[in-house]
Image 1 (cartoon, one colour):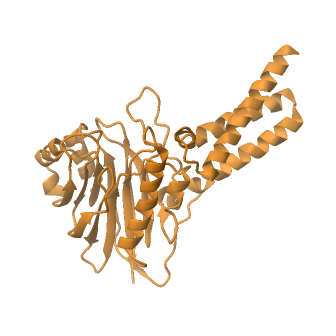
Image 2 (cartoon, one colour):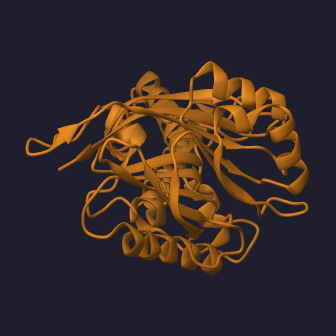
Image 3 (cartoon, rainbow, N blue to C red):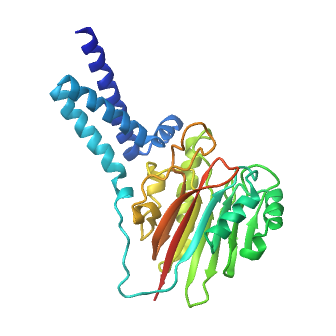
Length: 322
């Protein structure tokens, strides 16, 4: 009887953990600890699922019903990422897709030759880079990035994680910093040469932890405002970067309005955890992401960035025109 009570208590505790995950997913607190918990909602819900299984094994039916509701609510929070929802544009025309590669290069320390090899391997048309340093710019050039993606708008920093860059096969017009943030966020018009122009942004808002939560929340809200101001009311947009936010953060999902769509949501690619990539355990949170508007993401894949603590992303995107 004592063992049964202990297991029942542990199971109820696991269900409470799952319920906490559901709560922080929807409430969007400005507490550092709760925002940190928001990053791990899938794991919290998984704990609730374990609690459900224990309750079923104990035949604690009433508690199991409550646990089932918690788990279903938790699954619902991330179900869109597993169900493709590609938009259609019946009154518009499409051209050839472009390949976009996203890479956080870990304080500029990642293997530059390896990054250039990825550009070559995936025949990338665009590379967005975060944590770009002056030394990394030099090493990428030595590795041959100029031959593959000669159009460039880079804003490196001597050291640290604040630098950002855009490398492109296509001409970049009206390139400029996207407002003033703790770290560089960049935007430019990508001229595809067939009548289509894409607003392309490489973003890197500050992390929500350990900095004060309100600063992160303010940067995320500011990012949404500035993206919409630059993008206008119509036309294709691609936003690629290290958002320092996951699907479970309300500030990230707030970006997904007015036609802006998460690429994983479009393709049904799932969680795609990207950080940390250099630990003894698999990556657990998906903070490297892509968002589009007036474009169809045909394919989204997680990739390894040699020497980085982030996984990267590569996407095939078809911007629409008309």
